[in-house]
Length: 114
Image (cartoon, rainbow, N blue to C red; front, side, top):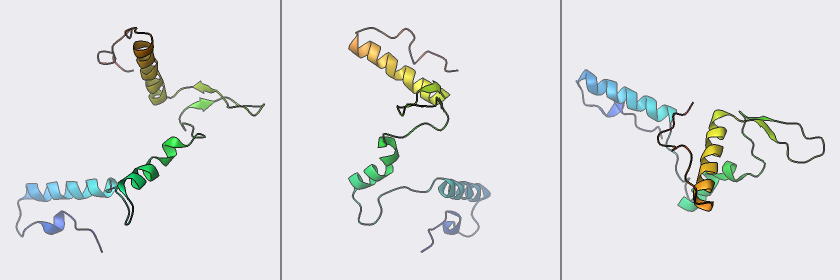
């Protein structure tokens, strides 16, 4: 069964603004389809399936640069991508604040991210 499009449910002679809005909504739904549980799947099973890549211990960021490991150990990250660097800084600030009772040097609310 074909999903209903927004343009198809407009009344005959609808205002051009509503037609443009319906086309926009159809475009959004095509680019970002609804993601939800499959038939017979519980909410918990769906969440576990969707987040499986995040729990993979061998996952590595495709945008970061890693060193070559000749001895079979985990290769180190030599260059961080902006997203990973921001996340790393956020975790360092949280650890400093909660574990050491030390306030972060620069507030993440006022810092301009570059």
